[in-house]
Length: 242
Image 1 (cartoon, one colour):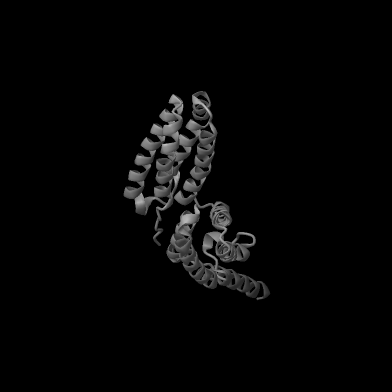
Image 2 (cartoon, rainbow, N blue to C red):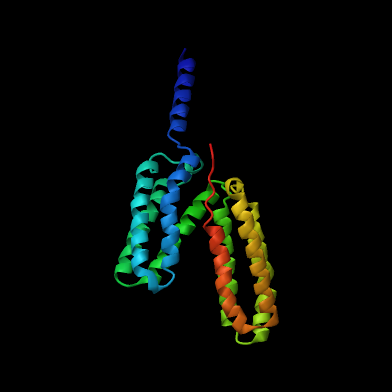
């Protein structure tokens, strides 16, 4: 009888623990609004020209993320339920947003942008810990490679140095672009994704050709199209159905 009661108690505990984990699909749907404001805030704070719009967008993100914290801090989505320090991590974007708003109020827009990047890495890290293979993080990964090749290209002083940038980094950037297709959450956005992937592939090929030819002026002009190709994929928002 004792062992029977013990087993029943254990099963009851397991059931209770399982019930506090919310569905990841529900979390994604709730996340869509606040994360759209975060994306917008990150783009608007990339320069000091859009401070009013950036301030408004960041305020909307803070309001939306407070809703995420209120709902999910004590009820983690199932993939996140075993992540150490989950509660602190899910609440951190709200603190970052508030600190970024203070920087913007002081006119420090670029500093606010750099601080907001922490949210990108925090959510990326959580998805990695949870074993989630998301197109958002493939885009994050490409972003890092893109920034490196663009920075080196901008620093090149002559045709030979520019061609050397392509030799060293060109294939890496192209591979990182193709890795977007390895994400497992593309089902609901396949048509949009395939167009963006194909367009970006051509843009990267054209950019690499410019680097190989050592055309410094053309390389500067093509930095914008490369960034735009990245932004199109980063903005794609897969929906996971139950």
